[in-house]
Amino acid sequence: MNYLDYTKLLKSQTSSQAYQPLLEFAVLICKKLYFNYQKFTEVERWGDANLLMDAIKICQQALENTADISEVKALIPQIDSITPDMDDFGSELGSYALNASAAVYETLEFITDKDKTHVYNIATYYTDTINFKIQEGKELTELEIENHPLMIEAWNFIIEQTKNGT
Image (cartoon, rainbow, N blue to C red; front, top):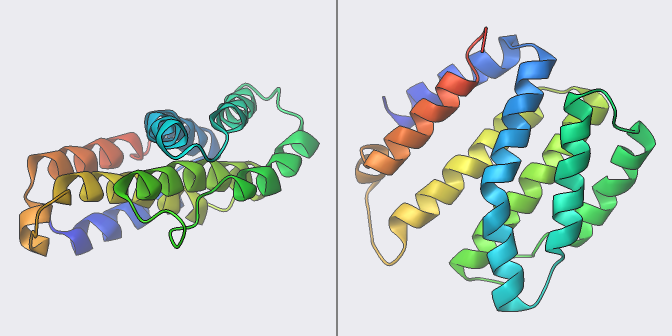
């Protein structure tokens, strides 16, 4: 599968999937990316890993229909305020932290408006992180990235998680 085939399939699956499984997927990705943000805050001494985890917990509560929507809405600007700006943090860690916080931000947005585009974006933050990790210190072509075992694994994971009926 190449990138265009992957994105086409992902768009199709996320647009046809029900809200609850998409939210489960979004929360799973937030949890997977969280540790990148946590490491960033330790190294750069910037951000708030506890606030990001609190937001993930609220997203988890939304899965159980116990989240307070006003609390969800209040968290959105707070998460935005702890999202690193790449002009300030140009390292790989900054990119990973940006993707982690953006995934949580988009999950909170998804909870409030149920726009499935957010889930597509969340999947993209995950694969962008994998892409950055594959390329650390290397100059790879698009074809080499697409055929890298970690990218193939990431794409297969996302496609499997966003299938109807999962």
